[in-house]
Length: 163
Length: 166
Image (cartoon, rainbow over all chains, first blue to last red; front, top):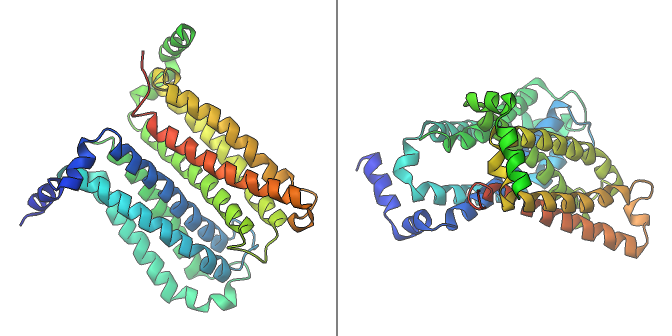
């Protein structure tokens, strides 16, 4: 089955059709998506800025990370589900949308960057998490994280501006 | 209402409005910056509320946390104002003639009204040293501000979908 056929099948499902045809369902899901993503991006930015030393070392990086990231993940799940619902409502259109594809790539990049950071520099965070400057690999990861997530927001907003 | 229509028409005719409208990229970029500033506000207030609930950062004082976060909150609100003005200038009628927009403006006033006390109440006295009724006031304002900012964001999204346009 081709990608287009799959997308068509998805948007023909009852729930996807309901979202597409309802006047208020899509905007409501979209609002939830925006609220969730602001929490994801805001909390990740908090951690990145701390690692970069832009904010002063009130928090130990490890402690900030361990306390805040569970909430970040929760918000991400909400953003992902709401995003998937919106996608489903017009899957064929969105799958061909360049900003949407770019957004998915940037999300993947952000995820990979985060994973690499956690299995490398973060392993030794106990040693460097309470001082500045943070080790260079950590600073690189934090910078990339900001770039990717800001990119996700810009790409996401651009979706609606491209036909 | 007719005054607002006249103001809106007048703004639409300005060179600035035309300049913004002529560049297709301005509105998406400005909206994205607007969203990033919202992220700063929402995440900061959520952090502070979670701290008040004792769920994170318990070794940090509320006083210290508000000192760290509030400059960011106020800074982000200024960015929101500036980007908001640009968005209005690009298409004045879309906001100025929209009841959802004006509802949002009212909610922003309310949100600021409840956001400020959380900082000022712990300006000189640590949260734990406040009398019980003051602590309750801090908590009430903290929750109310979060609820109101969520309402502001909701209205913000709904400007595009609802509201009369004359």
